[in-house]
Length: 195
Image (cartoon, rainbow, N blue to C red; front, side, top):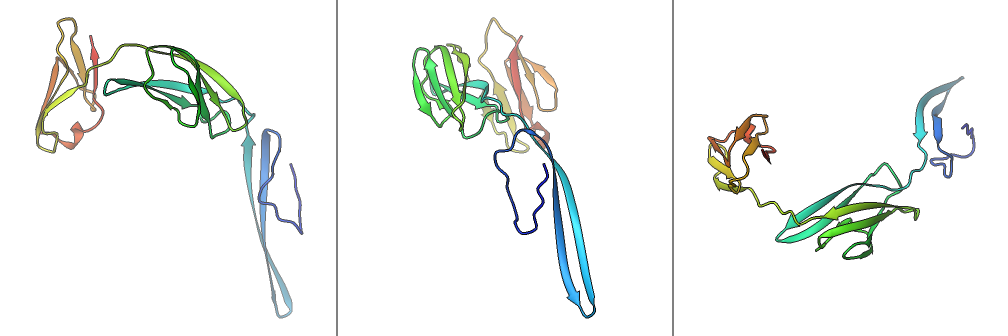
């Protein structure tokens, strides 16, 4: 697309089809001195690609358990549709009307159909389930401050053995993980899984 103007300056263009465009910006400085005309110019070129429109889509759903209540959080795919988005649950044990928040509170156990709607009014649906599985929290005894001693422990079970993975990748087996003399390297994400 080429737009040449001498009298008009455009800082935006609307309603153009998806494609790859070359943008050229030219700067001109005119200065007049005695007996001479100095003209200096710079040109900056760039390429802009406008992707085709895609309907909005929910990328994932998180089921959150907090204080004995369940919440469902829908995560939009920000590369699709036009923000801001709205969300609703259109089928399931409990229905939720169209809302701007992506969080559905006090959601009962069951199977659901959710719908995401973008600023253009286009929508897409996603099925998700909420189950009864609630994981007990990981407990902590001691101080996790620098040079402190801390023990992380999970609810013991005669049916499971737990594997802990520390932020540095080292692995420990058991219901608890003790760290004596906490250092900066001990900070980060700890993962636990049953074997």
